[in-house]
Length: 90
Image 1 (cartoon, rainbow, N blue to C red):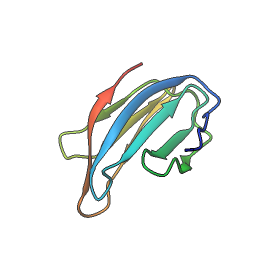
Image 2 (image 1 turned 180 degrees about the vertical axis):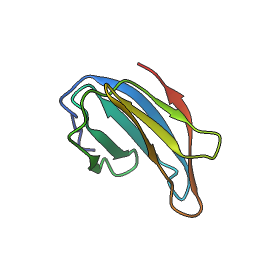
Image 3 (image 1 turned 30 degrees about the vertical axis):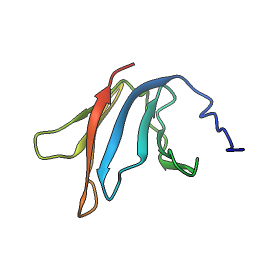
Image 4 (image 1 turned 120 degrees about the vertical axis):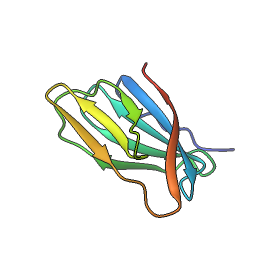
């Protein structure tokens, strides 16, 4: 049986990883946290915390992931061979 994890806050935007990040879901939350969830292993990793309030995610023209907070727009760069796609504003 596969474990199920709850992020414990309202999801406010998601993106899928591509390339070396394939199989990972990136989740921005209303509490200002950014999570990486591995779909195959159910591993949940907190990437960033302390934001003001997550609003949405979007892929930038250069391939970075824009993550908005109530007071800022942050940019997450993928490692070589990785990228982001399929963003959803929840």
